[in-house]
Image (cartoon, rainbow, N blue to C red; front, side, top):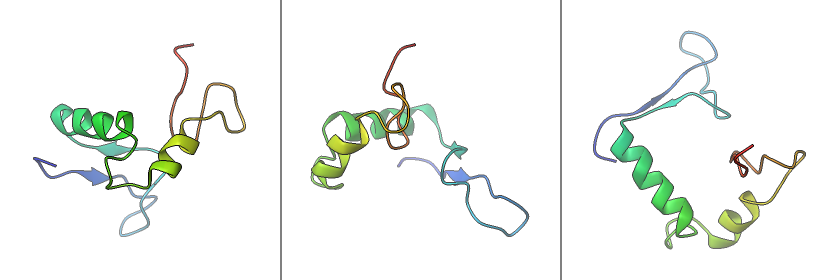
Length: 70
């Protein structure tokens, strides 16, 4: 990451909302996209990255990833 980033919290001094609300600059989001597209690049387990991109509980949503253009 090039710049500081942060998660929204569920309340003051609470827990991160890990299902959403990650705030970063666009270049860092692009880096995250490349990491995902390259199946983790050895940083994240590639089997998780492959599984995360499959439908889960909805046809258009994987494990924290939108997987459809619909």
